[in-house]
Image 1 (tube, helix red, strand yellow):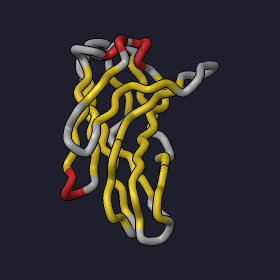
Image 2 (tube, one colour; image 1 turned 90 degrees about the horizontal axis):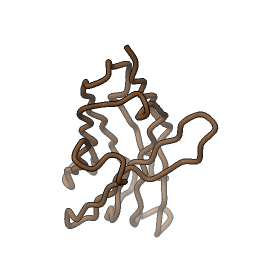
Image 3 (cartoon, one colour; image 1 turned 180 degrees about the vertical axis):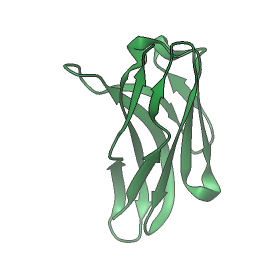
Length: 120
């Protein structure tokens, strides 16, 4: 079983910054794509950003130029640096990872979610 543990959410004023982290643990052989999704009340869970094992990235149009996704392959950890935050960025942010593990072969796991609230 591969587990993802997120940290870094909180309350921030508009224009502020936050950095989210997500560490994968378990009997991991390799991690392919990692990413961040978010879900606001009443909305679906949408992709925010994703990064491949080789570092290729893609972003939702709404966060391009403000958010940066990165990863540390040695630590099986993915980060999301969020700058120039807006009230519409308020949501629960979920980490996602997929790859291969000793226990289950292919894995596809979600974190528990971390709340980000942008408000004055």
